[in-house]
Figure 1: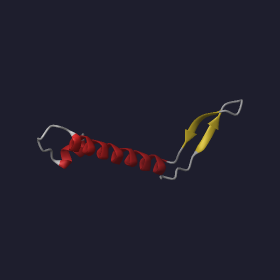
Figure 2 (figure 1 turned 135 degrees about the horizontal axis):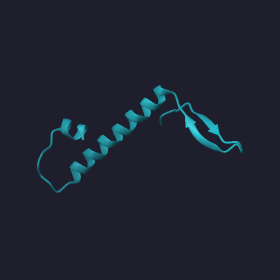
Figure 3 (figure 1 turned 90 degrees about the vertical axis):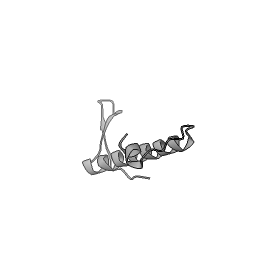
Length: 62
């Protein structure tokens, strides 16, 4: 699990309205999401009935 340092911005009644995270944590989140997208694309390609082969770099770029 990714540890995120976050700060909450609240409205006048104290309810959280926004979250602020450091740029480094944001970049970690983006990288994590991209990795998950790559895994999903790979799994989709493995379970597809299409028997054509696809270069890994082409999958990674999509």
